[in-house]
Image 1 (cartoon, rainbow, N blue to C red):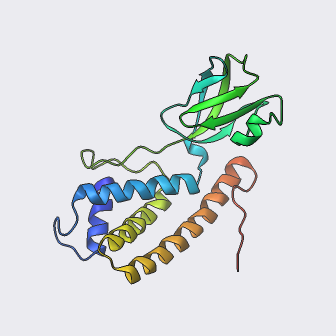
Image 2: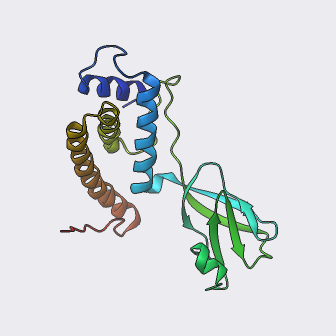
Image 3: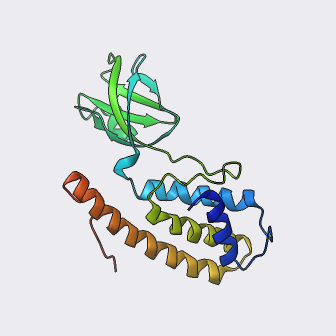
Length: 194
């Protein structure tokens, strides 16, 4: 689905005609929030990017498209507390928009990370979201949840939240199978919480 198709599909499902209650910008804003959330929940191998970080006094600026850490050879990704307590000799820690490294005399480091998806924009209506096509339906459902919340239709919002969650869980299973074939091991493990 393209950006324009996401807006049209969302409008149809909201039983709107034309611009209706919500502007395109509002719908795209909500779709981008959902897209960002999905990108954090389902980390696809296709969104891994490599860069070389240059450190000054143990600090480097994060790439602007950084979403989540993936891998840096011989370095552990730690919490701020573990970083301050120096639990290992070689470690990385994110604080704000910077990455800190120990040992602090490290000058450069190869670094792999998950990149943020491109933001959807009404000015580029034919662009598709940078997530698996299987997740485009989830973007529509998540956008509907936010629209119903804005309309204070809590029952409808809750109903679509359930549909969204079920769809995302199903897609995690599918993406996991695809990634397992790609990588040779499961990306997600199914858990049922009571």
